[in-house]
Length: 208
Image 1 (cartoon, one colour):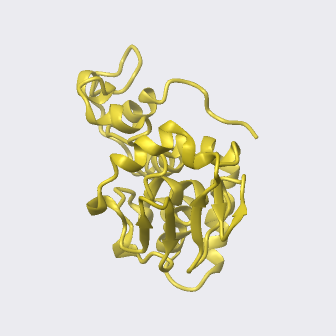
Image 2 (cartoon, helix red, strand yellow):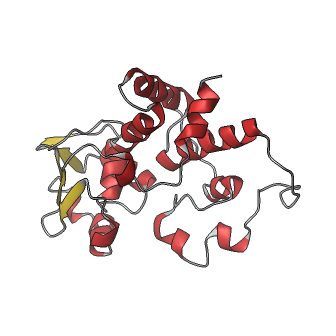
């Protein structure tokens, strides 16, 4: 599958806000948004009033970049959300939040979603006792997320668990850091999803 391999700091600058794509680096002075908080490119410092379409497009791009999915897959998630009962925008965020790579990141098994995807592809993550190597795998309520024997010995994962803060753990998840085991308590509600994404703009864009 195709994947963006360029400098991720440019993605944050393009969206004019921190997307936390590089983990701990985003919290330091080395973050590109701290040093150059404007759009990359020759005319990045110029001011222009965005149109309604531009705002909708940027919101969709921001969501894709935060969760690390490409256009075709993101559109498929939107179609799934549109077919479900309830508000389409909120359904879309739930679909994105229940991806395995996002859950691994939320549980602090990884410092970023990109790092979480790598851990999953390398076979370090188990769901209900079975190894899963598909980052887009959708978790369900009561699923238990754990580390394989080899995964529990990976230094990067151990460091991430040590630096984890319980205050940052979403209320729909729980974790035993010492055992390296997390559990999905339920499918997240809109209030439980801590994100700056304005889902209504994405729905407006795709509804045209």
